[in-house]
Length: 231
Image (cartoon, rainbow, N blue to C red):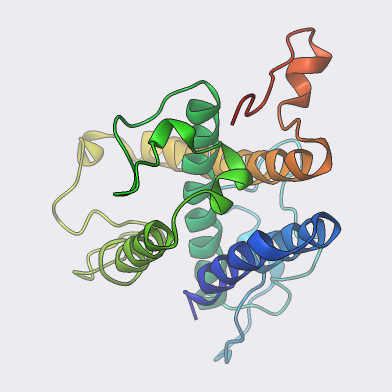
């Protein structure tokens, strides 16, 4: 069940390549909804909502925020499942926003993406790039993402201390030297940055499809970006 949202997102991305622009907007909304749709789980016991009000992420100004009631009558297993999905999509979105900004700024790999001479520099940023990447390149991307999803980015050794802990006894980066309070603070920072990134990448995609101006904030600030100019 962990992989349903990722598979759905890939299917929607492929459909967007051949769909007309109005339908693309509907597909974007469907993709965002699928990221937050929980899988069906059999509950062994239930827990009151008050049990989750002190969890990481329930903080000012909103506090515990569950407008869709996803945690009503939920148990700890369901909460951890939803937290795992939230963290995963937040991490993907942070990478997506960073990649979008870097490629928009002109950063590209050197050389060609295929044997026909299609250069990396000729691939547009954002959704427009999907239609320019050769089919074999897209297949390699999806295969690599699938490999990470199924083999690497998970609790392989069973040593995870919390949802999203993928250190697997190898990658630590000094985590164990932090105090318990500092660990909680850093986990909260990651969670909130991921939440912001999910909204950010959705906004970039929607504005790209609306008027090809994903960085509308720059335009409002008097520094417009000529997005994908010449590509």
